[in-house]
Length: 431
Image 1 (tube, rainbow, N blue to C red):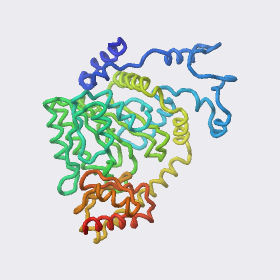
Image 2 (cartoon, rainbow, N blue to C red):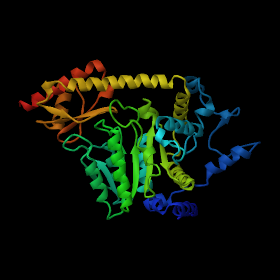
Image 3 (cartoon, rainbow, N blue to C red):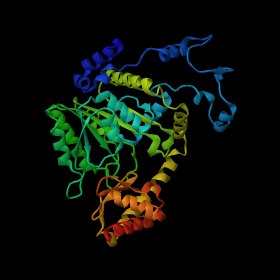
Image 4 (tube, rainbow, N blue to C red):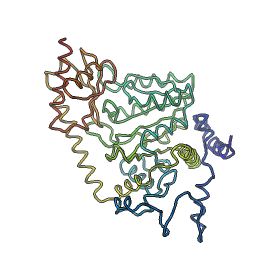
């Protein structure tokens, strides 16, 4: 093992041995190498005559570039586009995102957590957490309604054991008892990776304030029972809260909850700020110790350096300027209202009695999606039939459930969309 990795591990062990126990073998071996980047950073500060360190080209003391490319970005300086961004991201962007977190989540104020680290959007952030903390055979706790890409991230890449609990109980409420039971079943192994995704993909559900408190109590109980818990919060759709639900990330309420709980927030501008293709996300670690915060940042930078090297500088600059814009809050509220209007319209349409014989819908109060539970027909058969006969695309999740993304359907088209699904179900039922 590299001596730098050993030093990071020792510092983590001295501060909180449970966090050290949570690290995967890969996580224990990770560190930020003192190579070209660190030498270049030192040269930036001290090389006042010539800096011949970093692998970029310059011209007239500016990053070399094609003018026909620069002409497309006249609002940005070449220095904010072409050079490599630091592995952890632009410092100013990280600081701006932290300000945003504190503004959006009052419960985070006064809590101990590190500066957000820039990732190549949400999937990359989740993969970093998986690499750091999951060994083959470790248990990942998920609801039975989860984003399909978790399979690739946690099972295929890291060979984790995925266990699920029913997301809703028979009363169509969040199944807290099933979650609690699933957690406590991990007592024998002594470790659990818990994924909490609110608003949930695919159902579009966020717990109420009461339900969120119960979730936190279950996590605390499991930690008290001796289970090391890595709580990964997938906050991809944060902020899109339309009805009665918790309107903060659970991160602030879990930070510092128990020495055996390590809370990791994965979020980003992609879905929150409608810039999916720019691929800018963040990973943030809650830890009472600044030493642990720093050690986890160094290990994270090591992963980034060894995989993508760094995220897009241009994308980071665009997001930074957006966060600093006087138009940001106004436009974000406008888009929120548009999305809420669509969600309200979906509920209005779904409450029509003509649909009752054919499906029921799962609770939804937030996010981009909602789900139907079909009563008579197979979900995959319906998906294919709708494509071929009506030109309508939906997602089949399992044999009975389909996901509809109302986020990409105009409000005036929502009733027609569900009427097409209604016709498709009746076609298959009457065959």
